[in-house]
Amino acid sequence: MSALHLHCPDDLHYHVEHQVWARLDGDGLATVGITALGIQLAGEIYMCRPKTVGSAVEQGRSIAVVELAKSIVSVKSPVSGSVVAVNPRLAEHPGLAHEDPYGTGWLAQLRLTDVDTDLRALVHGEAVAPAMQHHAWLHRVQE
Image (cartoon, one colour):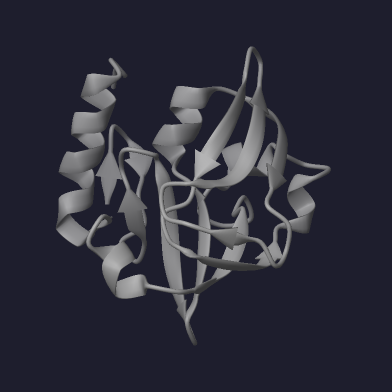
């Protein structure tokens, strides 16, 4: 599915307000990252530092810090859980978040603590494209 010509994979759950995604991996795990629209809104990422393994993270709270050209921004988590892995490639290649935000540019993997509650705040399936379009419109992103 696409919004503003930005790819939004159908298998992901999106927190549109924070422009982050979660892929439910099974066995109570989820991989999370920043959406393509979130990357477009933020600009080039020069540094990406996810929370360390073992950190507890709540939905809507910081899972990573990214350094942009003119600011340092906290990336909010789409789900609650405990960090079990971080993307080791981002330390040396933060550009992966731009090049492949839904693949090699992932931020962290979490062991979920309350997925049923978390999913209520996330958008999935056919609702994603209109939600992303509206978010882009609010932020004056042009096609």
